[in-house]
Amino acid sequence: MGAPRKLAGALLRGMVRLAPQESRDWATAMLRELGFIEGEWAALFWALGSATAILRHATSAWRDWLKGKSTKEADMNNTGKKALGVGLGMLSALALVGCGLAVLRILGILFPGLEHSPWAYWLAVMAIPEAIFVAATVMLWRKKGPVAAGILATGLVMALHVAVHLTLHW
Image 1 (cartoon, rainbow, N blue to C red):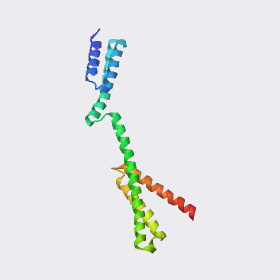
Image 2 (image 1 turned 90 degrees about the horizontal axis):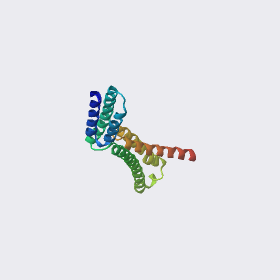
Image 3 (image 1 turned 135 degrees about the vertical axis):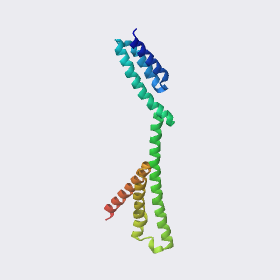
Image 4 (image 1 turned 90 degrees about the vertical axis):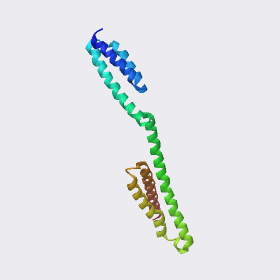
């Protein structure tokens, strides 16, 4: 066994010891494959390429560890956060529509003739909430994208509902 192969073996054994748990099996497999590489220099180049690949993989694992979460946890947490954000956006938009209906009902009690006015319905249920939906979506889009998407989805469904209603009744 020549010096290049000894150096290659020492390099990969060091990589096995230093690699994080996620990369250790992979590093061990590369060390075992070293025995099947023909030629001293080819084995050294194999070890250098393997060490580079292990370091790249380990660097991403170390970076995630420093952030405090594994890659799988990060993906699951991001998906859950986005789904929760969309749900909260939709819920807040529906709550706003409910408030508009409540204001309309209160106006009907305070001013009896106003309750059956068509412009009051348009104003309380469509115009004001849709304007708030657009403003909230624009303001939240960069920082709270999922919440803005939920608000936008609810606003679009409401607009579609009104379009269908107008088509059927006019």
